[in-house]
Amino acid sequence: MNWSKEWKPLAAIITVFIACYYLPVEWLRQSQRVENALWESLHLVKWYAQEHVLLCLVPAFFIAGAVGVFVSQAAVMKYLGPKANKFLAYGVASVSGTILAVCSCTILPLFAGIYRMGAGLGPASAFLYSGPAINILAIVLTGVVLGPQMGIARAVGAVVFAVVIGLLMQLFFRREELEKVEAAAAMPEPEVTRPLWQNALYFGSMVGILVFANWGKPADPSGLWQLIYTAKWIMTGLFALALAAILVAWFKVGKWRMLIVSLPVALLAFTLPSHPSLAFVSGAVGLSFLTATGRDENGELREWFSTTWDFAKKILPLLFWGVLIAGALLGRPEHEGLIPSAWIAGMVGGNSLGANLFASVAGAFMYFATLTEVPILQGLIGAGMGKGPALALLLAGPALSLPSMLVIHSVMGIKKTVVFVSLVIVMATISGLIFGTLFG
Amino acid sequence: MKKIQILGTGCAKCTQLAANAKEAAQVLGEEVEFEKVTSINDIMKFGVMTTPGLAIDGQVVSQGKVLKPDQIMKLMRPVNAGE
Image 1 (cartoon, chains in turn purple, orange):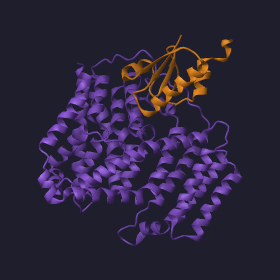
Image 2 (tube, chains in turn orange, yellow):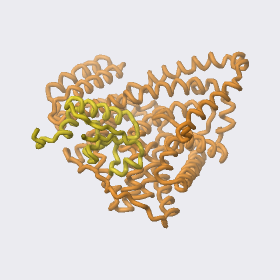
Image 3 (tube, chains in turn brown, green):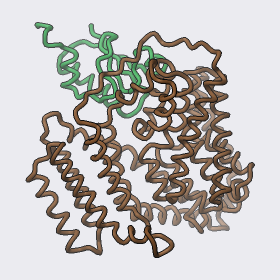
Image 4 (cartoon, chains in turn purple, yellow):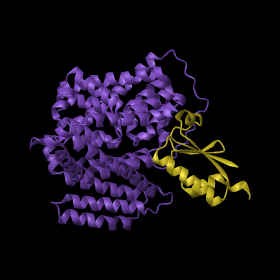
């Protein structure tokens, strides 16, 4: 028997067995919990489909696809190589997750690469911690579903604590001479096709569309936020126009093709202003058409579309099941699912040290598929989880899981892994405490 | 016999690249030995940080990209091979 391989199914079988052995069938039947859970999960899926898929996820997929195609990983890795400026390396490592880590499976090779062939343990740890938490899709969905406060706290917390954790790791293990891998990182030379400012404007226009299309109604119906809210579709439209102009000018989309595609969008926007999502959908369909049948020589546009499509194909099913399961277990806010709200409020309610610590430890070992942490957190908060512990879970959760710990262990050994995991748990707990005290 | 190695921890992109490489070898009608390198430490030995990577006869020819079968064919049979 190869126990290093067989322990996973064994652990799964034992867990399922214990769950079945103690299954509270009678209690479930009396309290109608199972029935409620079914309705809760259906309600939650419907809510996501109505509120988040069209305006938030669709543009976010296009942005993530564009990041995959137009941002050169090699250009970023230059700052994390063996000869990189150490000071700069920490900064770049802690923020580069936004553009490098669109998919969780890219994080571990990059981490191992930075550690073994590049800037070393400190920047590698910083990258490993912040990467999963600050990828574009995760931040956008967190901000839209759980509120901008939580989205910003997640991004800022991840970046700040990434630097701290990186520096501490470097400090603890400063005496250790690392056996660097002989192979120098063979990064391909970045191909420069477009000046940076053009790329910046291009991404800026897309982020603008995403931000304004999702601008929520402010609680206080006056002031700047309300002003922006009433003008949100005009702003979205202006950014869409900018994107169209950029695509024609710098991305070799034909003028006439763009005009034909824009016509129905403009028509819907002006004839049916009360249903802005119609114009939005036709814009998304038009963009898909333009990119999928792109006629530029180097195939950038088609590559953009196929990368976008890959993300959608990979992430949507995960999110669908994540929302269904979160709905069944935890219910919508103010409703109960399978797990009684009192349990959750008891374990992670309020903002005590215990609640924050519990949330961090649970998050560190649990595995979250890409983005599913958001519906799960939403359910937990609705069931009485405090804001501090919620942030702690968001910071410790996606960065670590039992499977990823095993890979990290194979890269840097048991001692460093234990220190890293403990640092993550401590840091997540502290940020939860601070956030809970300030905003709870 | 050529040896083709697919470097990747097992995500969807790596599987796709492996399938494309197999197709390329089939079209060329060449006998090729395939190997999937999944251990992260072994991948590092190639100097590859962005998976999936493709190595032909131990030489890394591409990384971070899912190459199409015809692109792989070109890499497997350079123009100057003169066959």
